[in-house]
Length: 156
Image (tube, rainbow, N blue to C red; front, side, top):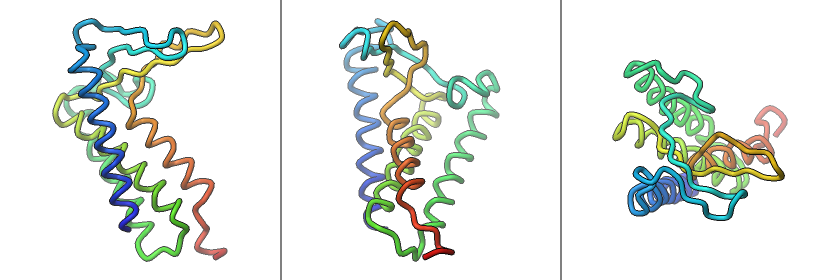
């Protein structure tokens, strides 16, 4: 469980530090967009009040707190599932990335009322209108790691 805690803390810190650096220090909140490596990588300011791709957007304060509780329940379920598990280290790191990324988004919802998003990627003539953040990358990477590397307790 030590690997889970370390990787979760690293993911949480990197998520929050990237948001502070880009949104606040570079004043993305004011300028709204910064082209970094167009069209591949751009910074676009986004306030996600819902879940992925804006689902549940507009559900107000109730939706905000429901999403906070839901994220905390999912983190708790992942940690509960891992207790006493005999898994490879990559599974514990994956779980930590998922938990740390989710907690980064929880911190945003508690402080701002929404999740700060700023990464936008497009390629090959396709313009992507969606934005995401470093925490979302960790959530995705952690979930993929759990899917591919976790051992089924029934078969183990």
